[in-house]
Image 1 (cartoon, rainbow, N blue to C red):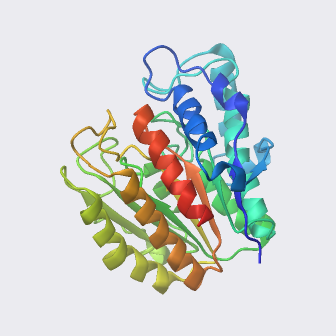
Image 2: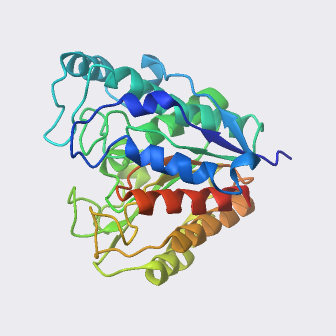
Image 3: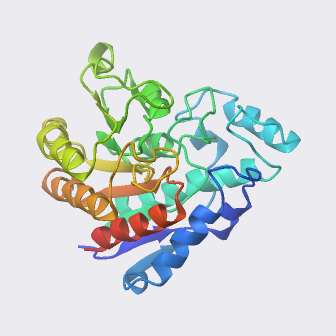
Length: 314
């Protein structure tokens, strides 16, 4: 059995310039990388250089012509939405961001490593089939789920999204797809306003979307209880072959986008990681790929990334 945890990162991720004072800034990765390099876990990681996703792969989860639309806006340096700013290089970097998660998935699917963490930007979980929003250009985790199914013969995939904001784009992409289970635990009310318990999937996929909106004031204890009492039984019932994590760390108690509202600690994220890894060993041959989403406090994201990766390494 492979023993290593893969770490996927590329310095070009820093070249996605969102402008001054934007929360989704390169310093998020600079701080997280420095913290990892100073940790005991750094030398234990299997480092992988990502390659860009192709336009054909982006279309696994997005509408025809969507990538060309993104490319045109980036080349003209026109914001995609009020909060999703881009520079000339952003299109190529977004392909590399998605490609980073695909590289992680390929390494796990081919048994080169036991699991993987892709520290990428821009993030992805708000991007719908035809609309970028919430700092996200391409839906990295959704493209990866379809990539595993189309290029590696994987059947059922589960996505666990613990970003403090609801993963509306991922939900939209798989809302009628019974082969992908989507779980999101998020603060409510909060951007983007979706993710109620009533949203459960449609048609044959009803029941494969599971939202757990959390009230302000929730912390480690409340999140862990939801994972133990709700998520783990749901995953056991679905029995996926692969578990993907949309690992946003903006539920950290220091985070400015959820400050004082959701109060997860780095130790809390470590425990959530353990719970996912344990159920993955039980039902999914240990196949876990984690991809960075949000996290905007430099201290919060860096200590949470280290705690998360330490648990992936074991």
